[in-house]
Image 1: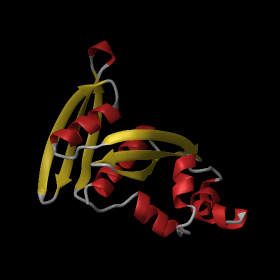
Image 2 (image 1 turned 60 degrees about the vertical axis):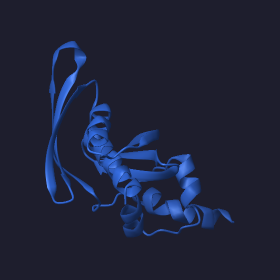
Image 3 (image 1 turned 30 degrees about the vertical axis):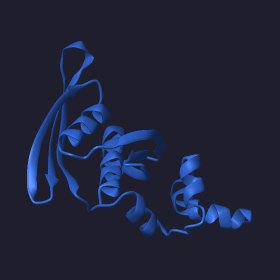
Image 4 (image 1 turned 90 degrees about the vertical axis):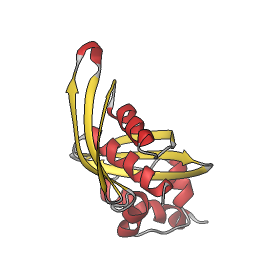
Length: 155
């Protein structure tokens, strides 16, 4: 494959933000030639079995943070809480308790202008998938990426 063709699939992200995708993600999608709309549909779906309603964090003693969230799972709204050292630990605990079990294998985050892009490689039952989240808040970017991964893996 020539260099023009090999860079085309990653161009949708690179052309928009002048940043490269994580290497293994870039290698995986090189042959897919995705438009920006197809790229976001594939790696950052807005539909799926789990949807974020709200997310808050309040500092507590010992450096921990108390996180509260609401999720839509199918037709049900659930409220969750977890006290941890960070949002990803809290989110994965909440998702696990709600039946969305998976392992995060790789986590990449980079500034893209005034926003942050987060890329997550996750695995469930031997299936590995990349997901992406973008938000002005780095924590929400990572939350969106993990939720996208849960939705992709639990379709």
